[in-house]
Length: 313
Image (cartoon, rainbow, N blue to C red):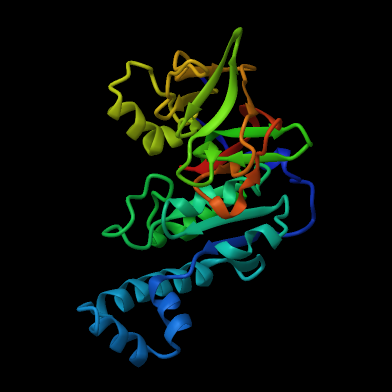
């Protein structure tokens, strides 16, 4: 188990650079934004919602709370620093710099969305609406942004080093995830594959499997663990270990259900070979749009990632 907190890793990220820090504020479109894209005007959106016995006012109010928080955060960035804003949908086209201080303003999922694009930059999670977002990964109030930004940029902010999951495919592709990696069929069909865990090997047919970090252990993995009343100890967010769960493994003359959960420590890995002619899929953190095809004969090795998320506390 690793220490829960450490100092922000500025020295490892290019402290010798003459460039001032850059604050990168990551947000995602609100429900109000999405309604306007679909219907064009607030009046049209309101009419649409009324026909379904819903109201625009609470949706607009949530949007305005986020907008106010965003305006405040951008206003407290020192004049000598650089700053920019990135939408979640543009992260795969955005180039982070070593000097960046990254701000996730919104729901917890934003932190998971951006974690795989970072290489040690500190992340400040700001929660603009505590009535809407739980705040596990965005624990701070926007009013504290100025102090947090200075601390993160100056190495004074304690950071949690949250473990991540890596999936390495036999063609060289790699997926990173903060919560979990899913392997299975992209439809509701059974996923067929060969699983190898240590010296144990088995052909399986199941609803797929997940490999979860300690961060993910508060979500999907926890739900699976509770439903099967397992005694398997789930890792904590900063533990250098992972948990895996096979979902609804089906025992038959050709498939088994003996290897359905376990812990991956250190250099341990779970190896999966696909037996799916079509529809095999691997994705991370619930983002199916970023899936990798996993057709018959392909192999994936899932293990602890060397990369960790530096979450400012």
